[in-house]
Amino acid sequence: MTLRPPDSPAGVLRTIRPAKPAIAYGQDTQHSAFPSVTRLPDNTLLVVYRQGSNHYTNRDGFIRSTASHDDGRTWSAPATVIAASAGTDFRDPSISLSRDGTKLYLTYFKATTSVGAAGSFFRSSADGGATWGSEVRIDASLPSSAISAPVVQLADNSLLAPHYSKSSGETFDSAWIARSTDNGATWTSTRVVNGQSAGRDYQEPYLVNRGSALFLTFRWGNNASIGAALSTDNGATWSTPAAAFTGTGRPSSAWLADDTVVVYLRDSAGRFVIRATRDRGTSWLPPYVVQIPAKGGMTTYASMLETTPGQVFTVMATEDAPSTESRLAFTYLGVGAQQTPLGFVPGEQAAVRAGYDQLVLATSFQQPNGALPIPWWVAAGALTVTDGLLRSASADNVADNGVVETGSPDHRAEADFLWTGQAGFGIFLRYTDASNYLLFTPETGGVNIRLYKNIGGTITQLVLATGKPVNAGGFHTLTATVRAGTVIAAVNGETLIHYDLTGAENSALTGTSAGVKINEQSGSVTQCRRVVITN
Image (cartoon, rainbow, N blue to C red; front, side):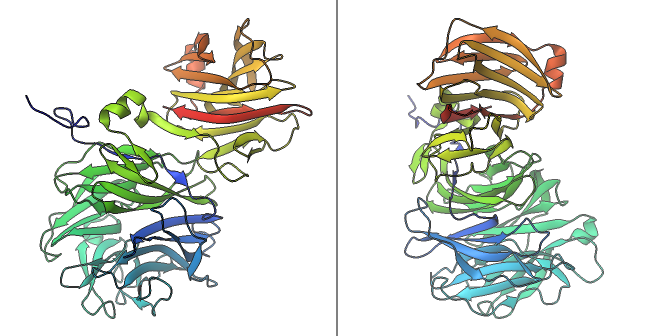
């Protein structure tokens, strides 16, 4: 008999999964994005990020920091690391700690309205980030340059800083690595992946190391794929760079104690995805979706740090469709089943049984009172959270639609509602906008349970169910699912509606969002206390 851990059935490697991300309330007004994390000798987690009024067009970004002394559960008020300066956008800050723990290293690049990549810069701090030394440009010989990765310190104490830059007269970005042997006072850059000769951009290189081995990931062709290359001699020579898998965004990575390399990236739908290799890039595990942004939005980068073997703290950010709001979120990746400071990561068998990998969002609205955070988007009316309950912002008989992008037209939504006065709440499926959706809703004093379609603004009743009233004054659980054109809806666990969309209906209703409708009127109350959405 062969004994094996419960999480590792025969032929199955332990899966890398996240605890579901948590929004960092209070750290993320305006557009807070492009974060990076390191850990101080006293175990403080220190995050730096760029804050501005939008993704980049206003060119007003500056660098802030926040710290956690309890493994990411709570965070300090933001502090300014580099203050705003008119006409200069400080972007993509990255932070790392020296091998002996005595210095912090900070990198960033500058942009202006006329130059999008106006140089890559380095600073160091000897007091835990309380003060920072003068900035040093690491790419002084290059006319165009940007950096979006932290410094790596080798065993000989030399510093490596990957950046993407152009030499004079070039039209394509290349991946370079700058090296300093005097603790960052001076730098020499070497081109590692030549975009000019390949006729494609190689951007946002990210470097991690284990001993003398270096693993480099970068954007291959701007937004087509993620490339990778390996060095086993401290960067003196490199394997032939190659496209590893499809994806885009900064491919930030972490090299774990068990020799796994985990890479965060943005997929074609703007979602946060991780890929992992256990053989240094020869093969890759399937993509795993960690977080889905609001409809039309996208990820605004992540940073990882292995805090204990097999447990990886992650800070990430996602922005809305207008690119004016981006919020920080935190999670832990777990290799196999384990309890992290920010939640449980199930093993393979438990995750399969529970449908954990299909979970898009689960919330009981335990947040400070106010607006719904990303990834929610309020598609109509106005919604607010008050003492753990989702409500209309005002009892005005205007439909308030709160939905979440699922990435698929097939999904399931479950929500607990309480109402008094007048019904009119419900669950949305295949939501595109206020004129295109499916709606499961109790009406007429909760006696009539209906399924509607709304196509191009024309609302049609598809099914009417009676005899099972949703009574006022207590919470009821509504559940609705659409799979391959079949809609099944239930109240308190009892299926009341089973409807097959026609071919025309199925073709017209292709929205990939699900959510809830609240419609309070004067003198009435509608409350939602729990929402669970899965693919």
